[in-house]
Image (tube, rainbow, N blue to C red; front, side, top):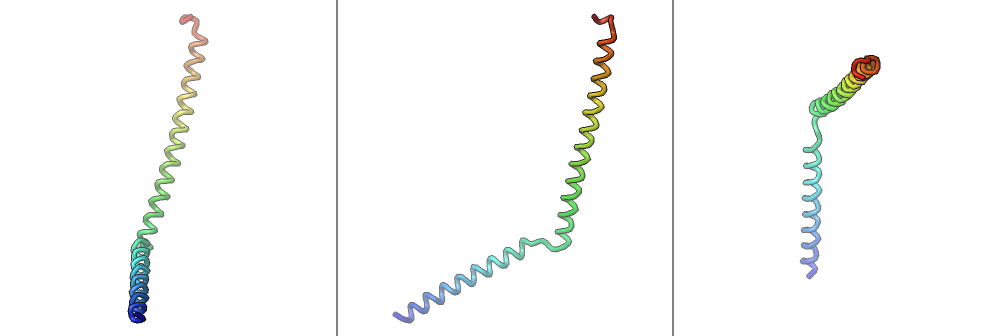
Length: 83
């Protein structure tokens, strides 16, 4: 009976060791090497810069459009032939 108890403890210890080694190996495999990490950082920065540039371009476009609409509205108000 005592031998079965020790075998059970040994098998539990082996399973825990295997599980922990699996976790450590998969965690190390998922970590990027420094070159890949630098590429990811550059990609994130370029995506951010692209979004910022797009936002400013949209802002400029809508400001120009609003100015053009104001000019057209003023012309309509000043033009008596349409009334």
